Image (cartoon, rainbow, N blue to C red; front, side, top):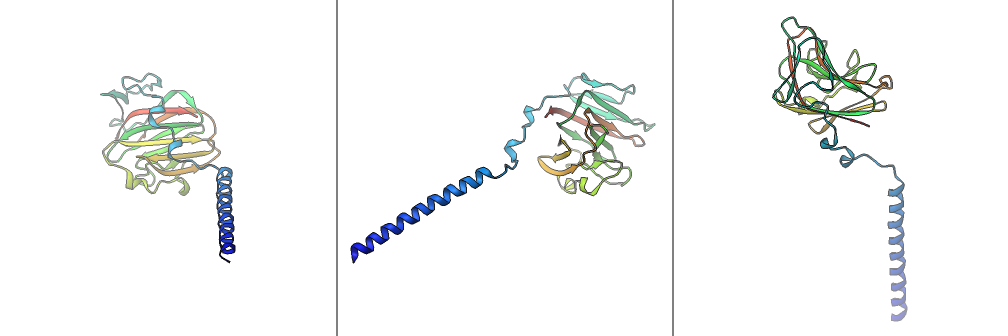
Length: 219
C-alpha cells in the first residue's frame, strides 16, 4: 500500500513539474509575441544628440536683420526692444522627424516657442498672449487644443532657472518632456513637411529668453 502511495505521489509530482514547465514556456511565448512598449532605455540620451548651437556664435543659423539674437557666455539670448518688435531665428538645416532638445531660462511675462515642421507648429514657452497665462510645453496651432496642452508643466517648471525641454516629432505624433517628465503628446497629420527649427521672440511684448545646449537628432 505504501509503495502504491509513493508511486502515486511521484507521478503527481512529475505531472505538476511538467505543468509548471509548460506554463513557463507558454508565458515566455506570450511575452515574446506581445508588442514591444517603449521604455526609458529606448529614449536617445542627450549626449547622443548633435549640437545645433556651438555656444560661440550663430553658425548654422539664419541670422535675421534685427540685432535681437546674441551669444553671451555660451548662452543664446533673444531679447526684444522698447518697440516690442518680434523676431524669429531659424536653423539653416531643415528637419522632418527629429528630436529637439535644449535648456531654456526665462522669467516674467515672456512669449517664446520652438517651431518645427511645415506648416509651422509651435511648442509654447512662456505666457500665451491670448490666454494670459503660462502655457509652456503646450502646442499652439492658432489656438491651444485641449489635447495638445501640458497641464503638469506648471508643477515641473522652475521659474527663473534652467529647464530642459525635449520635443520629439515623429510622423504625426509630437511628444514633449519637461525636466525629464513627459508632459504632452499631440497627434496631427497636418504638420508633415520638413522645415528649419525656429526660436521666437513674440511681438508686442518686452521680453528676454535664453537657450543653451541646443541639440537636434534627425530620426
